[in-house]
Image (cartoon, rainbow, N blue to C red):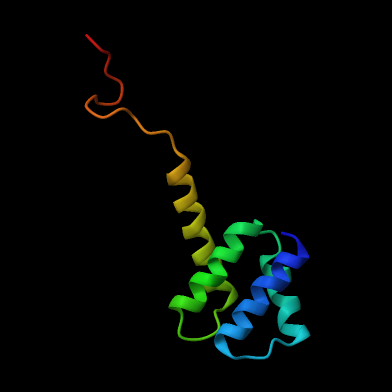
Length: 91
C-alpha cells in the first residue's frame, strides 16, 4: 500500500472515532497492515467507522480486509449461464 493511502485511511479512522493517533500507534498499524492493497484498505476504514463501536484493532481491520477481498473475488468470478448445471453439455 502507498504510504499516502495508509495516512488517509488512518486519518479517517482517527476522525471517525475522535481519537488522536500517536506516531507510535501509527507505526504499529503500518507494520502490521502496510502490505494491504490500497482500495480495499480504504473501503475497510469506511466500513469500520460505520460499524465498529471503537477504534478497530489491527486484528479487526485484518478481518474486515479479508472479508472485502472475498467480496471482491466473488464479484470478479465468472458466472455460469442460467439454466445449465456446471459441467453439462448442450444437446
